[in-house]
Image (cartoon, rainbow, N blue to C red; front, side, top):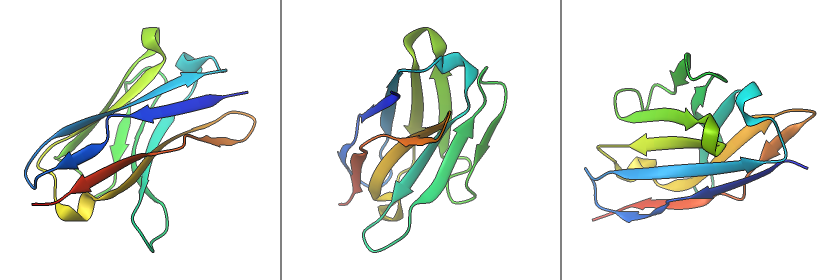
Length: 115
């Protein structure tokens, strides 16, 4: 079974930076697109960023373009999300996602942006 484990969340001040990691197991990691989503309290989960299997193609939600960077290290079975110039609206639980036979989600890591 595919397992995804996020890490790197925490409390950061507005304007600060944070790097999230998602370690995958149970799949041929290099064969799949990977995605990051986030969910704020009382809101639906929303797309943040995606990356192709080779890392050649990336896409981002408009709200994070120019501030967030998605990357991957296939040798480590890990996808990253570098978050810069963080805003309070970036607060939420961040999840990584992969689709193989079905959609798999990690348990999420909390990101709180507050002064």
